[in-house]
Image 1: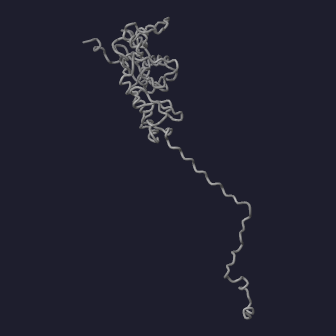
Image 2: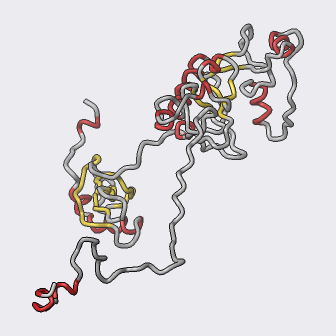
Image 3: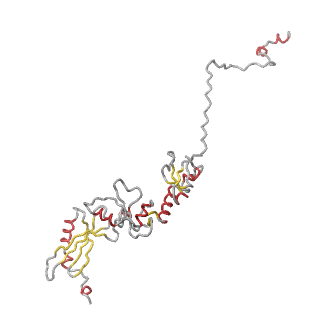
Length: 302
């Protein structure tokens, strides 16, 4: 049986009673007024006890101050072992740490920043085969890395050794030690398709696709079968790689927008006064107004 299993898990009495001593140690390590109520004790071993206190520090919900005290064998004086702030079961914790290379997002790279590419990057593959090691002037070569690490080294680009495959490749114009792999091509195509593809709202409302637009600049290589570069300054995709199935309202063959109709000029007739008769004009067969007022004598002599 090991010594650890023979230790008593019952807290030492003198160490468990040293609450004030533990609180004083916690208040010395913490800011004033952030050490709360005593939250219990835990036995860490023979004559070793940890006291827990609530933390009232803003932003540290569920955390506890843990002060470990101990005493020597046959001694009655309790001493401080350590004071630390520990998270509880419901503590608010920071997210798991992520390396900077995984936190980096498109657009984060600024002037003067360097983004080293891993030697086993899945997006890349050797530009030519036959040599295990990259050429000396490559950014991923060991020779270049040694010169970069040296503080007093002057980086001078030099070509590969004469007679090697790298020298022949450079003579033939194949200067790139690595090129895009099939995986790198697919990831680039997916990224461009999501940004400027056929399923975007702009393309859905476009009068036609980019494949028939005069402002489309073709790409070389295999990606040129599905993508091009927009050269229309009025397009939202100007200078961007767009899918041939993308489209926008700035298409070169879009119909001319009809001009809005001009309203008719207002008619103003202010050259003469308008006549408004006070009574309607009499009809030709009507009886004159004075006949209504004729006397009986006049009717007898007619």
